Every structure is written in structure tokens, then in C-alpha cells.
Image (cartoon, rainbow over all chains, first blue to last red; front, side):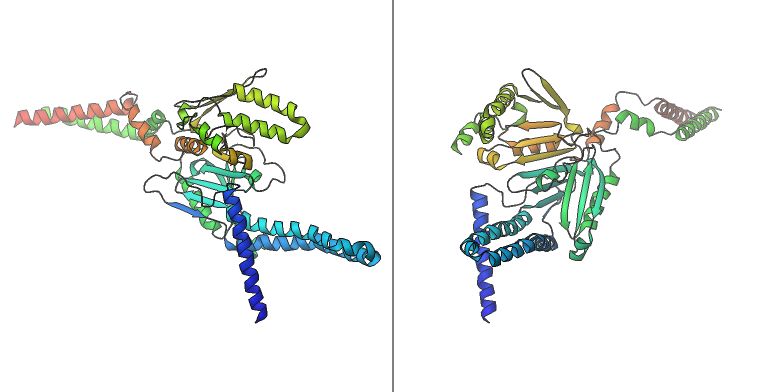
Length: 255
Length: 179
């Protein structure tokens, strides 16, 4: 009974702190709270979504694993130091604990903030991705320009039922190695991370892609060329036959 | 924040009328240089030169960006060839009402081909560029097609059809004359 009550209190306190952080971010750091808007033509559907809840769990698992890998040796080191030199270590212990706890809490908070500031907006024709807190990055891509679509899913991501959709436009250049978040969004790529309906998104973009007759390099179907293409040699030959038939009809009518 | 608001009146919100970056950009450059600490004078000079010489032109077809004193650079892009648009704002820029709009074409580099800094109405600029991008409007190619009609480049098929029409008209005329 007391444990659930304590859990409730903890949850309420953490929510309160989180809302406070959000308030500071929105008011002082000018982080927009809602999804980005895309100018939309009439009759075009607009869909805003965030990564799925599984993505948050996936990030948290990564966090705990990292914490275990980094934290465990540190904790063991501290305990050994405490045993070897208790006189020095006991007064220092609170300080060391705080030094270890603050980055851990900040990283945990950052996961939630990252999740809450990532937005994907899709219209029938284009895609806008926003991510980032310190550096806000918004990418806009029209499906007409998409060259290829890639769906990636690791074993852990499969466990959480999520996948990443990568959308490339023309032009090379690899993003900076190890780039993450805002920097990874640069270049000729849109990254839709941690969504549960990746196949649906892929199909949607691919169907737009197949509709498009151009190469997606800024070229237009040439009007004069398309007029010439409109008549094949066989069609012209048939027209010629029809003309001849009509002509003979005309001469017979005279007779 | 007041400074940004007062400066907003100096720059037109219509992207086509923007020719110079806003003064807020110079303040931003100054702050960025201050953040480098001892490198301040090294950092501020090129940025100041860039600010002073930066010129934008948004015409009907594309964007021209030019800057530089010793080494001059000019970048020309057409709207139709834009592949993707990036809008980036860091904390300082958000505080000063600024943004960086990067435009990428299909050239082979990860760095954006056109970078537009110091525009206060960055969202409007981005939407303006977006509206001119390929794939936003469905009927652009169809709209261009009728324009080729009066040009009369249709060649043989049109000539054949005309002859067929003439022959049929002839048939009808003679039938009528008989009756």
C-alpha cells in the first residue's frame, strides 16, 4: 500500500518536474510545443505524428544498458576507494554521488525531451521532419524528389515493434560520421525514426514515387517532347490509311 | 527581444523583396565571435565582411546569393531544382528571431548549396520556397502542355488529320449535290 502511494507521489513529482522543464524550454528557450505546420492545398490530407511509444521504451532500454556499462565500473571503483581510504572518501561521497547522478538524470530527461520534440508531418505531397532542442532542425522534402526509401530494423527495434524509415533525395555526400539528431537530418536525407507503421509509410511514399514520371532531379516532362511521343509511327501509318480510305470514298461519291 | 521586433519592420516579409540580411545577423555574428573567446578578432572579421557584402535576390526563377570582398562567391539556384529545404535555429538564433534556411540541390555534397542567413521571416521564406518546389503542385506539367499547341510543332499527324477532314467534307458535299 505504502509502496504504491510512494510510487504515485514519485510519478506526480516527476511529472511536475518534467512540466517545469518544458515550461522553461518553451518560455525561455523558445522550443515550439506543437507540431510544425505545412502549407496544404485544399483536398490534401495532413497527418502529424510522433515516434511510437515503443521508441521511448527502446531509448530507455538503451539508456539503462549504457548506464550499466558506465555506472557499474564507476560504482565498483568508488566502493574500493571507500574501503581503502575511508577517511578521505566518506566526506567526499555525497559530492561524488551528485556528480554521478546529475548526468544520469539529465540524460534520462533528455530522452523524454527528444521524444517529445520529434515531429513528423506528412501531406499527400511532402514530408516535414522536426527534431532537436538546442538546435532545432526542420527538413522539408517533397515525395516527387525522393530517390529511394529504406526501412531499417534492428533486433531490439523488432522487439519493441518499431523501425526507422530513411528517405533519400538525389545528391551524395555522407552525413558527418557519428552525427546524431539534428546533424543527421542534414544532407539529402529524411529520417523517420522509431515508428510502428513503417511499412505503411514506405508504401505511401513509394506509391507517390511510382506515380511520378520524372527522375526527381528537377526535370519537367518536356511539353514538345510529350506531343511527339503522343503519336507512334504505327498510329501515323493508320492515320495515313484512314486518309486514303476517306479520299477514295470521296472519289467514289463523285462517280 | 524588443530589438528583434523593431528590426522586423526594416525587413520586408515578402521574400521577393529581401536583398540584405537583417541587422540582427550582425549582432548574432558578434555574439558567436565573443563565444570563441581569444579568437574574437579572428572570427569577427570574416563574419563582418560577409555580413557587409551579403546580397540576396529572389526572382521568378531562382535565388542568387553573393558575398565576399577578397574572394567573391556567387551562388545561383533555381526553385525547380531544389531537393530539400532545411530550416535550422539554434538557441541564440531563436532568441534573436533569426534562422538559417539551407537549400539543397542534387549536387554531390552533404553541405547545402544555398544558405540563407539573417532572414527574420524565415518561416515565410521557407513556405515560399516550398510552394515553388517540384511536387507541391500536381498540375504543373499539364498547365505547360497547352502552351505548345499554338506553336504548331505537331507535324505529320496534324497534317494527316486535316486531310482526312477535308476528304470527308468533300464526300458529304458531293452526296448533298447528288441528292
